[in-house]
Amino acid sequence: MSANNQSTTMITIGVLALQGAFEEHQQSLEAISPNIRTVQIRTPDQLESIDGIVFPGGESTSMGLIGDVTTGLWDGLRNFVHSGKKPTWGTCAGMILLAERCIGTSAVITKGQSLIGGVDILVCRNYFGSQISSFEMDTPAPPAPFATVDGSTGGSDGIDEANSPFPGIFIRAPAILTAPADVQVLGTVVAAPCRAAAVVLRELERKLETGENVVQLGVVDALERKADGGISYANVCLQKNNDRHADAANFEEEKKDATSIIQERINITLPGASDETNAREVICAVRKGMILCTAFHPEIADDLRWHKYFVGMVLEAKQSS
Image (cartoon, rainbow, N blue to C red; front, side, top):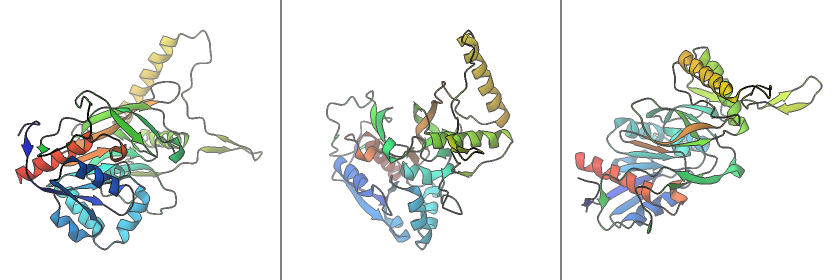
């Protein structure tokens, strides 16, 4: 079935409703077509009757705490995701839950962030900063969907769906730092980490250089405390040669060589700093098989293209079953 084909199949998509923007996802999905029904998922028995599930944005720590104490839910979700039979989409906090590895986890959770897993990506929580640092920026458009539901409405009138950037809304957003070759990268952005995330990244790089396999890493103190009682922020920016007459090209070449040495030593593709502001390229959208992850919040953008793409995944899986 081509991307232009339409299906009259009725589909039911669950939205994990423990916390976060689950109602916004429901509204977006149901706006695509009357043939799409959504249901709020709070118990494991509800998973049997759905064709796909969305893990919404919100607070991943809260979701993990609620999920852990809800009898059978976390195990049920793990079975649903890891079976690879039906699609799962995680946005923002939902993406964190689907990651196999996570850094910047909450300092108040003794056992670390509770993850469901499914995609071997390394995610940095709150990479872009706190709630007050939320922003919108252009991100790559999603691929064309496998199929569309009969009677679909774009909600994107006037948008060149294939070429126009998607309005990515980042709210206390995570970023994907690494993804192996079997994970399809659907979008990247260049952005500097917030100071707290930059300190965590520095600690991560230190651990990786020693050969440590990092699965989870909590927040790291971004303050340096002095002997006289004073405090200052840790310096996390790249250091340029202070010699004003130093050749800028040599600096860039040295920086590139240093990054290559670190990457070779730790045998992992860690995004390198792109300039003296510590900005770097990070991944904001990936897909592996039946799992889709986006770091931003498509459910609050006036654009249904990512929801259409996920519906296409659901239709493809339903047709293949």
